[in-house]
Amino acid sequence: MATIAPKAAEISVRLSTFIFIGLSIITAYSIGWYIENHRRPLRWVVALFGTIAFMGGTLMGSGLDWNRIPGPYLVVADGRSIDSSANAAAQWAARNLPDGAHFAADRELGALLAATGNQYLVIGVPGGGNTGQILFAPSFHAQARDLLRRGQIRYYVIDQRLAEGLPHETYYVVNGEAPKGTRLTHAELGKFDITPGSRRIYDNGAVRIYDVSGLWEDSTSAVRAGR
Image (tube, rainbow, N blue to C red):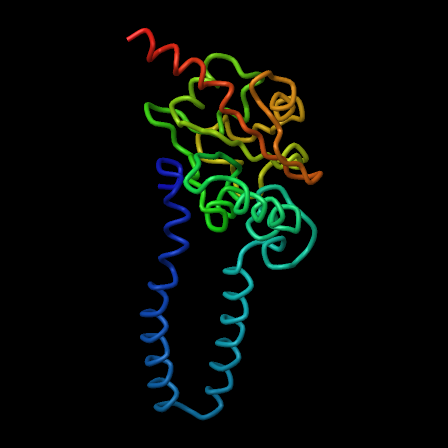
């Protein structure tokens, strides 16, 4: 099912909590009844196996090691991607960018800025495509600019560390951005600095915010003028 619908895996993980609440009640009742009707030593055996099952479920159900243990930045890894650099960028955006401004970012930075900065995170683009495809574009060719235009994306937030490895959470922005296992490169991220129309307005060393409206606003005006 997860192969057909990639989101199914994430949904099933979230639903498992509610499923196991019912199962745990039934199991607890069954164990209690069984203990009350059998020999006393059996209680210790059941308690031992119950402890093992609980500890194993907790360890296995809480995710991979990197998600349970605090540590340095990891590429697209839930809380391990939210560090002082990410928080500083989010705070700056909240103070300096207009409310409701359309922006794009990787999945972790995007969620952080949308929650704290009062901006509008764009992932899927009207008419087809997504903002992850903009990241993987080797340059701001016509297709990349068209994605920006259709999404009305004014700002793109880039964590330079994305190029350090593959995302721990399967994809950088959204499923379908590129073939699975494709790694972002410094050259792909670097196009934001070398393309006229893309202007860096914030930089804390790790996270940069670009005003990319100059890459598509002129074309939008030209289309309107031709109508």
